[in-house]
Length: 121
Image (cartoon, rainbow, N blue to C red; front, side):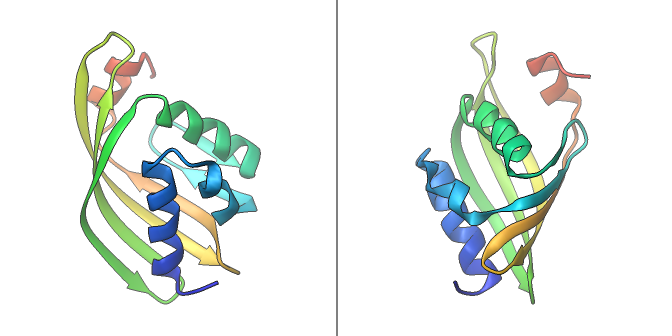
């Protein structure tokens, strides 16, 4: 299906357009780990991603690096908040691609403002 970077770029292209094609690029046994949320399997991952997409406005790619089957992306997300405000969040993501699909995704960011805005702890 292409290089790891190609898979990640296709994923984010569909993600940014809110095109459900992003789901085709996620392994059934995907693992997700972040400061506030974790998921095992495509159903849990999809639920978290769809919730996020409900507030997502834009994504800016600051940088992206590929090392074999791993891709590191530094991203800026612009989001609407549940209270009607707006916020930006800088996220570093390390994605592993196996057989043309995301199999492991780790996100690193400062969760304090996000947690306040979205009522998470």
